Image (tube, rainbow, N blue to C red):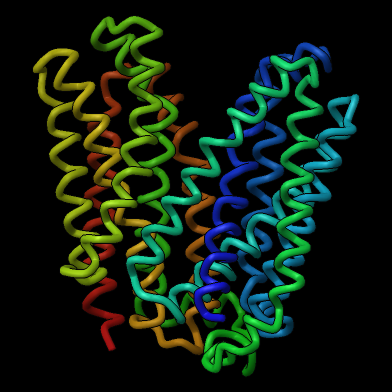
Length: 385
C-alpha cells in the first residue's frame, strides 16, 4: 500500500507541473482572440501567483483540519475546475476570474504534498518527485501545441489538461484510506494548533529559510526568463539558438533532479544544497567572465544543474530543522516566499536591464546566490536539532 501511495504522489507531482507552463504556451494565440496586448498575460499570472501565496500561508491550518490527502484531492479538484473555466472563457475578464481558484488550488497542494513527502519518504524521493514536476511542466506545452495544431484551439488544450486533472482527483479521492494508514501523518499536521504567521516567523531559523527560498526561486525564474535575451544581446547568439539554450536550462534542472535522487544515497540534504550552490557558482562565473558565447551557453546549463538539488533538499530538511509538528507551517511560508521571489525579482531585473544593461544578469544572479548561501548556512546553524 505504501508503494501504491508513492506512485499516486508521483502522479500528483506531474499534475502540479502540467498547468504551470500552459499560459505561456497558449498566450500568443489567446491574446489575439481576446484582442488584448500581449503584456496582459502579466495580470493573469500575478493573480494566479497571489492566490498561490495566500493558499500557501493557510496550508498549515487547512492541512491540520483536513489532512494531507484531502487537501491534495481538494486542491487538484479546484485546479481542474479553474482549468475547465479557462477552456470555456471567451473574454479576457473571465480569465481573471478563473485565475483566482487556479492559484488557490496550486498553493495548498504544493505545500501539503511537499510536507507529506518530507515527513514520510527519503530525500531521493523529494528530488525525483520534483523531477516529475519538470516532466509535467514539459508535457503541458506539448499538449497545448498538439491541441492548437490539431484544430482544437487553445481552449481544447486547457480542456484536455482539465480532464487529466479530473481523473487524478478521482484517483486521489479513492486513495484517501492510504493516506490515513500512514501512522505518522498526524505528526505533520493532523492535530494540534495552527500557528499564526507572526508565530511562524518568530521560530528560530524561519526568517533564514524564507529568505533562502526567496533567493533560490528568484535565481531560477530570473535565469529562465532572461537567458535567451542575455545570450542574444550580450553575445549575438541567434534567436533560435538562444531559445534552444533557454530550454536546456530547464532540461538541466529536470535531469539534475533525476541524478540528485541517486546522489542523496551518499550526501545529506545540507551537502546537496552546497553542491548545487557550488555548481551554480561555477556556471555564473562562466557567464560573468568575457569568454565568449559558448562558455556562456555552458554557463546556463550549469546554472540549471546547480539549481536542481537546492529546492527539494531544503524542503526535505524542514522537518529535521524545525520538527514534524511545525514543518507544515514552515513549508507553507517557504512556498509563499518562493512565489514572492518568482513574482518580484525577474521583473526587477527587467527594469535594471532596460535602464542599464542586460549584461548585469550574472552579477544580479551572483548577488542572489550569495544571500541564499549566507541564509542557508545560518539556517543550518540556528535550526539544527
